[in-house]
Amino acid sequence: MAEKKKFQAIKGTRDLLPPETELWNRVEQTAREVFGTFGFGEIRPPIFEPTELFARAVGGETDIVSKEMYTFEDRPLEVDRPRVMGDFEPYLMTVKKLSESGSIPSTTENLEKIKNFETSWEVFTKSSWTDVHSLMEAEFYAGEISLGPDVSLRPEATASVCRAYIEHGMHALPQPVKLYYMGPMFRRERPQKGRYRQFYQIGAEVLETLQPGQGGAKDIPKDATVDAEVIEMLMTFFARLGLEGVQLEINSIGHAADNCRRGYVQKLKMALEEVKEQLGPDSQRRIETNPLRVLDSKLEREQAIIAGLPKIADHLCDDCKKQFAEVKRQLGLRGVKYQENWRLVRGLDYYMRTTFEITARGLGSQNAVCGGGRYDGLVELLGGPPTKGIGFAIGEDRLILSLQEAGKGGVAQGRDVFVAWMGEKAQATAIGAAQKLRAAGFRVELPPVEQKFGKALGQADKLGARYALILGDDEIATGQWTVKTLASGEQRKVAAQDMVKFLKGEIEE
Ligand code: HAM
Image 1: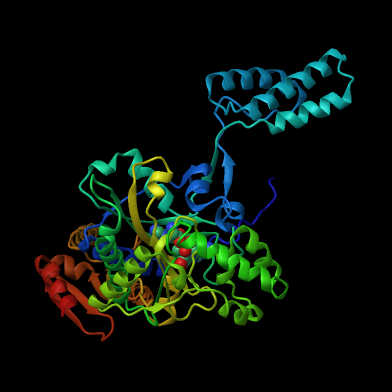
Image 2 (image 1 turned 30 degrees about the horizontal axis):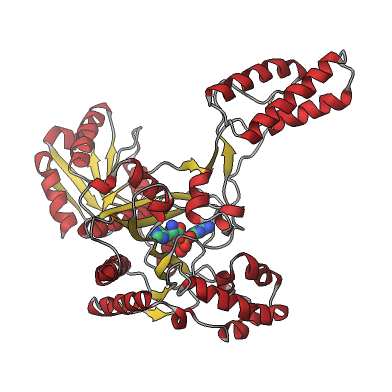
């Protein structure tokens, strides 16, 4: 007999269960409604994409791409890794055929691995299967050959949205194109409260391909307005949900030019070199890989040092300065409160100019419920036309946590009506009643077997039902059904044909 094994959800993943899922649905429904009123439509991109897409968009040096992605080889159906020696010969044939047809990567590197495998396998077979060294070599190369493109579970969705925008020629649609999405993302992070390996985002992106004559400084007021409206939409959504302690922080990280961010990063790097010895190992490493990320450090002993570093606001070019000033003015016009935070640099490479983050109450150290910013040029970087972009993603798990902490998560699953029945005839009537009530939108529980009324009412209570419909011989004979209000115990008779109308009136009261 098979060994008994207890399976559990993988660390960092979890089951979302009723009644909590009602809150998730309410949050998602509210997002659909609010985003819809701002003219956004839903996009549902796939959950895995070529690794290369994320590496290019998010950045190969970022934590997300360099250590957190779930990546696997998407090999063709015709081929599998050899398991026993007898597999080697057919494996060699298949791999050669597939690389010729382009079904597995035919990069120089991969072709070389195939060649090395072939040579060592040949040496081994020619040695009358005695040359253990070349067998080991053959085994090694057999495992090294790349059998398919690398794909990754999406760690975020902005890259996918841009890929889809290009793939479906959305630049030809009326601009800008406004899209929202919701669904699971995957990052191999150390799980803790508010941080999971499978987590959910609700995000939105505004994309606009430059038309002839567009671009440059004259677009600044318009771009800033779009940024502010996207943020306004977010704040409207949070307000609608009653999220508490919402704080919006904004910054501008300029654009990649010597007289703007590049120049600043150089100055920052020089300043960091001077204080290098006082910094921790992570920050020391970042001086080389990504100096801006040092500003993100939460290490207590680095805070005073960071406070003395050069600030980007003093090094923005004129256009970026103007754009940031206009974003702030536009937020003011919309009554959106914000705080400037010059240390807000974000952990993804595609941002330029406006960046923002939102924190909420009750979340501990993982308190960012939303992050976003402008990413002009990303679509072009992924092979599309010059296109502007701005968007955000909300961490839905954290949003839900914050709502629950504030006591706004309390949704009992409950039922509207529990149909208690006894006897064969009553069952037929009960089925009909349940059908009618469900069609009218009531949440109905219809027990599969007959129960004594006392027991049935007890169960109705446990399920949090509001009404019990009691169907016994008497009710069937007279067509006058008994309805019991469970909270008060009040009981009355209602004619069968008036039941839906009666309950509607009661529930809407
Ligand atoms: P992000 O800052 O990496 O941005 O993620 C956005 C939000 O997702 C975070 O503020 C956080 O609430 C949530 N989040 C991230 N990682 C986890 C995790 N491991 N567990 C739970 N929640 C998490 C982006 O993803 C960008 N694509 C946002 C964007 C869209 N920028 C422009 N457009």
